[in-house]
Amino acid sequence: MLNRPGNPIAQCRTRAATAGAALLMWMIAAGAGWPQAPPSSVGVQEPAQQAAPDRPAPQQGEPAPPSVPPAREDNPGLFNELGKMFQNSLSILPPLKSPGETIDDFNARAKDAGDSLSRLAKPSSMVAGRIICPVSANGAPDCKLGANKLCQAKGFKEGKSLNTDSAETCSAKVLIPGRVRKPDDCRTDNYVTSALCQ
Image 1 (cartoon, rainbow, N blue to C red):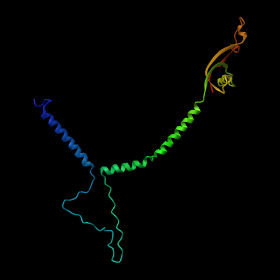
Image 2 (image 1 turned 120 degrees about the vertical axis):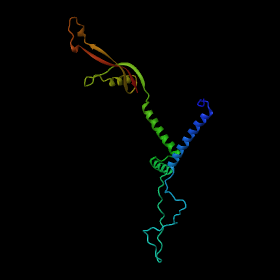
Image 3 (image 1 turned 45 degrees about the vertical axis):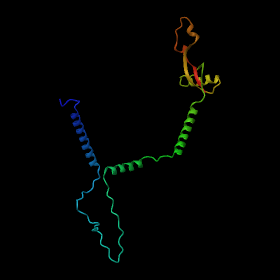
């Protein structure tokens, strides 16, 4: 009956155990983060200043050598290591621009993008018609030349073929009854039927 879920004593024990475990973890983590310093004995005092054994004592007629401050020992604590990390990361990052420089840079990029778009977006129109594609030197149809001719017939400068069609053109010899058809009696002609003109 004491182990029921609604028992306040069992809940108190669970919370106390959780709090104790959390406190223990915090103490372990905090102990690891403290700087490492040599242990000091309680009640023992160190002399105020010890003479360095490699320096001879100055003579009465000679001036005292300038005192060199002792080299600062590196403190290997958590905060010291975080400070080193931030100092090193600042040297890697590029310098920040002022707001005016940032706006000028943005305006220059926007102008370049606008110039690029204006070059791409020349006014163009799609025209329809039917112009034969002339045969090029290698025997293939040259539909670019056909598209240019179609666009020039409509008042534009040049064009790009959008749609083509082909048809077989035969000589009248194929209509003679009983005549055997030869390979050179017919040819295939290609036509530009629509073009994008500029």
